[in-house]
Length: 236
Image 1 (tube, rainbow, N blue to C red):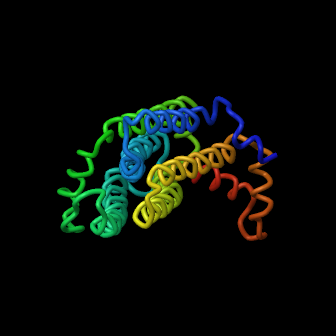
Image 2: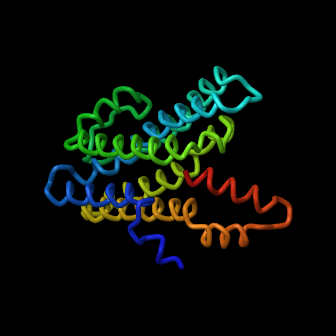
């Protein structure tokens, strides 16, 4: 059953496009290995931006307990703080490396300015932005998923994905810092990220796999229907 997770289909086409494009860019020398790491890290910001749009669209079809005028600023502040803390941690790590010149990890604007000047960052950001835009249109707007979830539910949706992604990024950074296998670290990160995407897509689109996971998680307290809804939400 688990072989279907990686089998190409219209649902995981974005993940396949992402992995193939990144590997080709890396192979032809259009991007540096460390640019892949920072690109994935910056993608968390892109995901947060699109999540605010999802919250707003959802609010037009759901009567929220709290005003969307409160929820969106709250999400931006909370999510922004979350990213800022992770950014400082990454800049502390990279400050002792030869990859980029980081003098003060807490100077986030200056440090991100350095990151945006990395070789090939425009390819990475263009690809990741396009992928997230396509997912927003074809996986959220067109299927009308804004009718399934409230703004409050959507607000917490990105955290599971970015926690996994950031863990993989930080792991790859350690790999680069303490070895000379920077290309292998970038490839490893691309493959780990792709595997996560394939698995999350399979949860959303494959009923048999979703049922199996729900059965394993079921503890008699939370209904299976609620578990299914939460899994679909956090796999978006």
